[in-house]
Image (cartoon, helix red, strand yellow):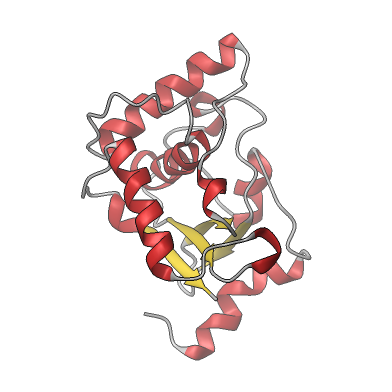
Length: 183
């Protein structure tokens, strides 16, 4: 774990750019990451995920952040990419699905696409490029302005359903996906 003195340090990239959201090569640049083994452009088409936050851990490990304030945000629409882009997305999602041990019939480019494309980008960094990356889902409780869940238990149930639909299992990569519950 990280000590209290580390919290300011690892959150500083978020603060120094007024909590901007990045996508495509800009997210890699912001993290100071170079992909030496498998390029982003070969893995995902342009106009990829927009990250709610990016950070570097105390040892420089990239941390990709996706924030959710209410459970319906987990259910995202299917990818609206063009046919050519969708082919690239589907190929990368298929490889990611295998790495996570999923045999589910659920279309990873369909509903829950936002969740799966985040997993795919962790796969790109950690599996394909051997970077010590993490994916953190920040799940807020008591977000009254959007009728968010009142408890961690509500989030846990929703996430269990998502994982069941996607067929996610314990895998070498799943331990680098963390869910942080913030009141």
